[in-house]
Image (tube, rainbow, N blue to C red):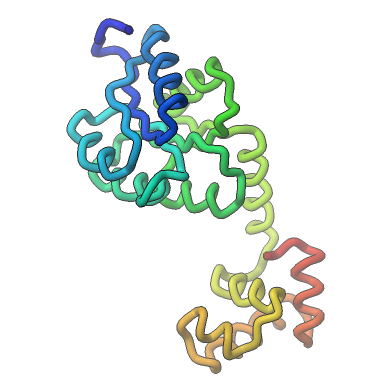
Length: 212
């Protein structure tokens, strides 16, 4: 284990797989310039104890018992605004990626990341970067490009997405907690912005231009 050094990058780990958690601890403590200050198997213990040590970086799994890692980041970020959070997970789906970033994560790595790249990513995030596995970075870039070319607001995009899924006005209104008239107003704006006159045309354009 590294001797404690005030110049070390301190890292806390939240991971419920004991073998992975121990391996990460060994990698971090066995690398010059790094120190594993804490490790926990669930978010309850992490939220209670990590703020006491104020680590530089937290490596957070997503699939954790009871409280998810995404919610854990959201809770910890309130008391640790200067700490950087890197999700370390097997999850590659869009919702996991973007919900993690929205919760306050600065980086997103898959668990097959080699140890050398993991350590580089920890350094990078401390230096102000946002390390991501290549596949995740592509997802973020694709989303950014989609948002750049979409003329729709976030709420209009949500309505259009539900139209594409076959939902009717009443169902959309209930899901979004708005009136039917509000949904009709959104759809009118969608048609105008997309230069279409029918639901079928709007759905076709949304799919062809990757707007949802």
